Amino acid sequence: MMFERLMERKRFIISLGIYFVLLCYSYYYYFYVYQDYTYQVGYALNLNYLKLVEAIIFIFLLGLIYFYYDINKSIYLSFSFILYNLLFVPLSVFYWMSDNARAYFYMVVISFIILHVIFLIYKINIRKERIYSSNALYLYLLVATFIVFAIINILAYVKYGNSLYYLFNLEKVYDIRFKSRDILPGYLKYILQWSALVVIPASIAYFAKIRRYYLIVIPLIVQALIFTINGSKFYLFSLIINLFVFLIYSEKLMYYMLPALNLFITSVLLLKNNFIMSVGIRRAFFVPQSLSFVYYDFLQSIQNFIYPVAF
Image 1 (spheres, rainbow, N blue to C red):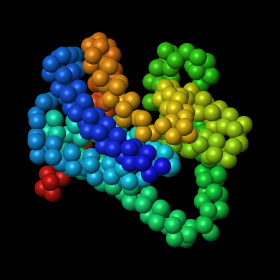
Image 2: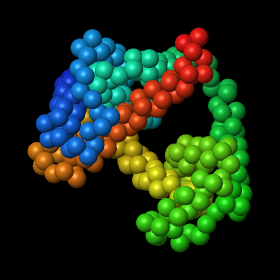
Image 3: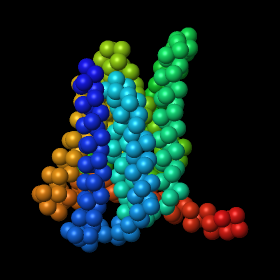
C-alpha cells in the first residue's frame, strides 16, 4: 500500500511537469506556429521569465496538498484538483507567456490558498474530535438550503419559465436566452446560477451519499425547470460534468486525470485539425484565462478612471 502511494506521488509529479510543458507548447504552437488568425487577438506572446518562475513556484506549492493527501479519499480534493488542473495551471501558463496582470494572478493564488487552509483546518478538527456535536446542525442547514432554493426556483419558473419543449430543441434556446436578459431581475440571475451550479449538484451528491437515489429526481426536475427560464445550456451540461466527477471519484480514478489530459493534448496537437485544435486547445484551456484577465483589466481601468487620485 505504501509502495503504491509512493508510485502515485511520483507519477503525479511527472505528469504535472509534462502537463505544464504541453500547455506552454500548445499556446505557442496554436497561436504562433499554426497561426489561426481568426482567434489570435487577445493571445499575445510576451514571455516574462520572472513570471515563469512565479508560475512554477505556485503550481508546486498549491500542488503539495494533492501530493501529500490522497485525492481519492476527499471530495473537496477531487473538485479542487479539477479546478487546479483546468483553471490554475492554464492560468499560470497564460500569465507568464502573455505577461499579464500580476495582481489578478495573485488573487487566484490567494483564493486557492484560502480553500486549502479551510480544508486543513477541517482535517485538524476531525483529528481532535471537536466537531461531532455540530454535525446535526450542519445537516439541518444543508436540507433547509435545498428546500429554500427549490421553492425560489419553482416560483421563478411559474413567473418567468418557458415550455419544456426547449429541452429537446437546444438550438432554439437562444430565443428565451435573449428574452431573459431583459425580464429577469439581477438578483434572480445570481440565485439561478447558484442553484444550477452549486445547490442542485450538492443536493444530488447528498442524496447519492445517503443512498436515497429516488430523491435525485427532485433536483433534476428543478434543474430542467430553471433551464427553461434563461436557456443556459451549461445548466444541463453541469449535470453531466457532475456525473463524470462522481464516477471518477467513486471509482478512485482521480490520479489518472493528468495522464488523460496529457494524452488528450498530445492527440489534439498530432491531429492538426483546425476545429479540434480550436476547441481542444483554445476554447478548453485559454479562452477562460484570456477573458479573466480582460475582465480584470477592464474593471481596473474603470476604477482608475473613477478614482484617478487614489490609483
